[in-house]
Length: 302
Image 1: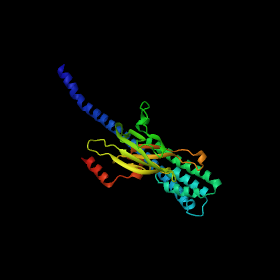
Image 2: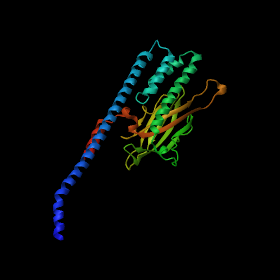
Image 3: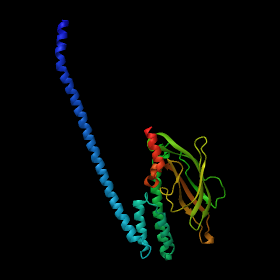
Image 4: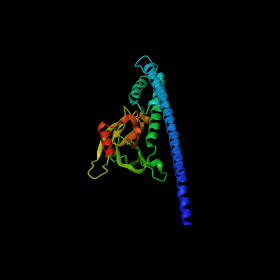
């Protein structure tokens, strides 16, 4: 009986080997076919995405060229046409161009406009500026700790300030955090920031603020900056670099100027907002320094 079993097993080996090889070959061909299909889908998706980006860039370039050439000439153009052109630029290029100089230029032209049209033009200019701020703030706040968990208390990153300031106490004093863009579920970047409004300039509707970033590690010194913030400063282009990966911006949301009529005189106030976000949020406007890139490459190879 044992010899019979041994003989059957021995005779079955030549039959089993081709079957096993055939199974392995089939599985390999199946895996290779799936890989080729996935690669083809990836190439197709990449090509479609690239073509869409090229088409979008061509359209935006055309808009940009026409607007600058036709509407934003220094002289000889209607003020309403310039405001419409600025609105087009703000809608299409607010995240890649610093539009503050154009806003200020049109603001000066609005001040020289006839009195009956001045208020309407000023309202349109303010509307466009507020729209740019709202879109940029939404983009910079997306994904931060305040939005990721509704049970977390809101960070006090906005303040109403009486002017001139009666106290040197910080208007905003809090820990700010954002998740690492490369590891959203990993540890968060956290920095304690304070903002103190020191002065204001009613003629230009702006405030002077001092921001301090507290050192996080032992031996790391606090950093302090002072700057003027006006109504045409936008956070994606008017920000401050804290470290290689950290950025902050201060936005003047509203400035309540004094009235010309003494009988209705009102106190000056300003509403400011602090934003803390990763460098990746501001894209091409915040290119890494060449030494940072080299350092990252060397560290990656190690």
